[in-house]
Image (cartoon, rainbow, N blue to C red; front, side):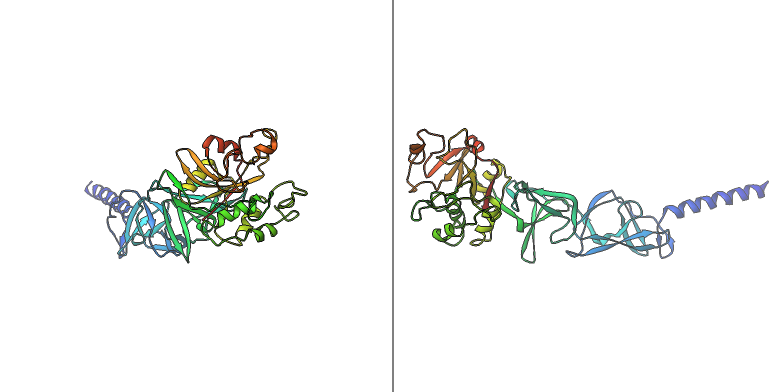
Length: 374
């Protein structure tokens, strides 16, 4: 009877030892208690642009795998084990990383002011990357041209700014306009130019408005040269019709072609077509004038809905936008001194060379085509 009891006791002790050995990690060949850890979100903290190794626990040792995790990426930590004197964090399943390469992830907070607008090409978007300077894109995620995003942080990689929009979400600043909206009212130092004086180009609003935009932070534009060399139809996106005589006129140069043309003077010009009126407001408030396509004072409205005239937004205050309209002889020309006299009625857009437009009026006029400058 005693022998039978002894056998049962040894059997239960054997089961207990096996159970303990399966639940405890090894240290130098001996299983010990794992340090307890509350699950948390961690970020790989290594060297920018490089990765750390993922291991598998095979029951006795940590076996290195071919999987690597990029510096700066975030992962949830579920558990911890110490094997051969080295602490590892479990990232789910049988995936372990040395704890010295993971730190608590503290999500950056939006400062309430920093905005980013995508300025690439009309109808397109830009890729989102997993880290600044990385070639690894976030699958299926692109940011549409003209959209605005809140910026959490910034890194410079080889002289190029990268902006963080979320966890493991970065964009190349080359295709964006960045700024901080630090006030609710602004008037930017944008020069006024007429498309009549000193160069008489009644159909040359695009080149004239472009000159205003470029000269905000760039070289002086020779208006005669700009009018003479404006890309024309059949060049893709080019203007149709003579800028001086109007012969054959059909439409002005589009935003894509005008952006490329303006970059001959200033490489910081960006196509922001697709931007909302609110985005334009934030751009202006953060120091970026905006050239947009709208109505001229000579159009027969409401019948003619073509946005065939270029103007520049240079300020904002209390729901109103300050606009430079080149279709006047002088910056001092007032409302009613332009197209109204020729067409015989006021179409609502003969407002003078420099005027304030309400948000509702701009919303009615603006149809999405615009360019700006960094």
